Length: 338
Image (tube, rainbow, N blue to C red; front, side):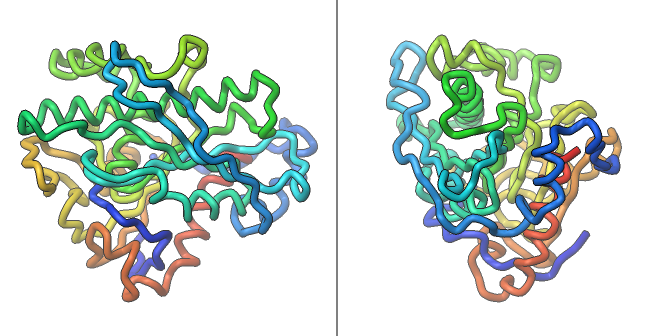
């Protein structure tokens, strides 16, 4: 599917960063869910009063596990006075920045937007490169990517734990979705799609073990007692390290990518960032093709002539905003309501 233009989803200060018919079996759904799925919730902005929780800590500093700082998220949700749904899906967003810069404030606009659709929506911090001394090589950068992904997993577990401890946000712990732009998309794909069976060589095994295993070492012992599975992934100009990471049982993936992306390859190639990284990445077109091959529900919006950041920021890509929302948010709603 190709679109010529895309209106900016949000302003980012720093950005470097498969095929079955989703027919909902509503007879097995709770009455409340059936009613919601027959409305425009999740596809059109419905809630204009938003509650927020800023600076929510989801992982404490732990120098023993290379956590040099606490990790926080900002949460947005439909105001309690206007939304009485007892189980709401969660959308967790991760910023871009080539794993060397960026912060959760970059995703506030899209987090608020998805909250207005009816989600409990969060923008998270995650670990990025702590120092440029020694000069980082590909192994150091890959290790940083793994740290980011296990931080995302701790954020997922935070919401599942919250659902058990009173559930004051009225979330559905079985309906958690993750996504991001560029580095944030890479983080989400790694956190959401890679499991123990995908670790097939000593290099990967060393990186995973160095960071606490496949579930990681981020978060409290209580946090780590929950699982980090998700129901879907939003990939905005991201990539995976290996296509074999993607299996038929992985969460569905919705992707957006410019086919002239100069930073993260649309198909396959080395990332073009400040720090030379001698590793090939497989971008959204390769991800789409792999998902089609293995039968994993997915979709891809290709922006013809689009680069890495211009498709989200510049006016010439502004005419098809409604197309993205119609496709992307309907994709997620189909997953929620199946």
